[in-house]
Image 1 (cartoon, helix red, strand yellow):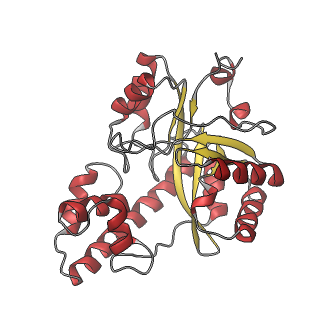
Image 2: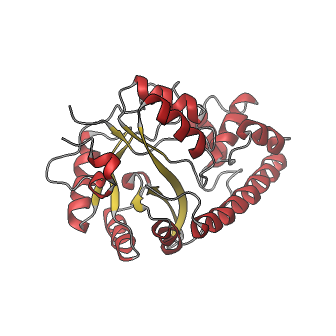
Image 3: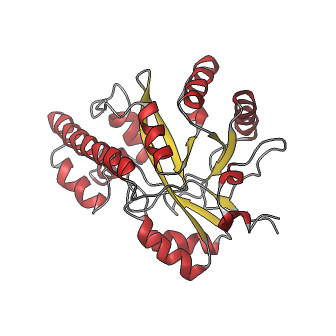
Length: 285
């Protein structure tokens, strides 16, 4: 039987609902063979995840999802099979963490001006020891009765041009890819069709991404339609990029996105796991 890969998911170290240990238990229950934990701009959950993976017999890849800017467009770059303690990566993530903290305080200030008080202590509590993300603000707004669900909170308050939105000067794309490469990982552009970019622009992004050392692109995600997969596969082939697959799982309450519940990669693509070490290669047929 072929192994089941899920190379994009989140825990309470960022904006996921499950602790790393709970996430690994769910992955085991869903039949996942190889899992990458890819929290936003932090490797905090990886040690606990590794301990659980060893107990459960799951192959865990150390991963991360890093916010980056290219031509003033925010992109998400997945780092797979990284050394989470590498000093270059650690220094870069410390910068990102500081930016996240500054953004959270500014977002809280903007919401206060709209009559929504005490957002910062609330989101700090929701995030616990993890990184504060916009999803935490969305949950706060739902709990405060200002939005009916997360998407409504983004639509009303947190998206570009809305009252709580704060633009953030993340590290540039070439810097982020360099951090991942320095840490021995492989850089993958996450969910290429979710940036609302024209075909011409996503072509430009992927060409630049490859030029600065990126090697892969997500072809199959938990939200991909058959047309999305077809288009993403075409992009991977056109730009000579390896193909990755990941649910982007955050919360078990979302029935549409589940660990390991993913369409297969289309034929003719180079799977990203060809680049991983012997622990993964030993699982391949």
